[in-house]
Image (cartoon, rainbow, N blue to C red; front, side):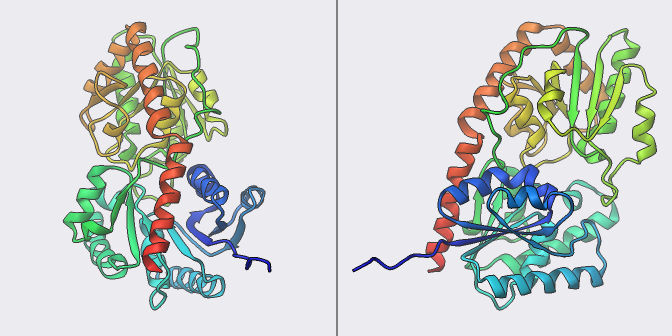
Length: 381
């Protein structure tokens, strides 16, 4: 007599955009697929749908506008998600990001499917002190407590500070899990030799004030004024859906400053770190910054702010240097210290590589997330 056929567990990722899924969630999704999950992705689909399908994943297009608070666009997203969830009946849903978690939570009302609600950094509402951000934080706290603070749901954070912040707004500590990042491919991103030529600092990320890009440009100006021939390469684009974004005109103007090159979007991030001696991310707050993880995997020393998420990877006098938030002079001093010492750069870069391989690789994070998925499904069963 044949054993009954067991259909695979169905996993639904809900992400804002297809490109965000590919750039940040792919290691997790591959690990889930390799563990036997049938992976589905609901997102706003642009030019990356075929790349997701090529992984063996099923794509479900949904209308999703990042940063838009229009009730009409929100209702459209909620209805689209609810339809997918009812038709698919997934074993587990993984919502990604604050906006997605809130809208996904509304779309799941009355549906007891196990959820992982990933807070990939607490974002503008928690980094800005503007009145709009403070109001948004208050609304988000109420929404998270009501929609997601439930037995079948778990909050996934990337660092201890975000965990503490969610506890502060009333999230049950028993429903909090911490996994450091989304994982990077430490085989594809291998240690790179230092380039020839002037010391070069690299920045990779969205061009937001809260990512510290303006502070970094100001620090570079300080260094150049002191006759330091340090170059700055900026990879990334403005995020006009975010009120914290620099303008396209300002980014273009940086190309007119001596020693600064704005590269725009870089497809192969290893080409950035190949041309840089130092990686810098003076962010106000992160989940666990992928840009620093990738730089560390390439063996680059790190300069970052003493802020949530950053200090998990930029460990003082081990993998790099930490400076206060929005302090261009301290940032310039830290970069200058590394620029003057190849021994420090080599030592910090090697330690950064070891840290990522041991604790933050795609393999390590994949195993942790699959374990969390299975635990949530078993708990609901």
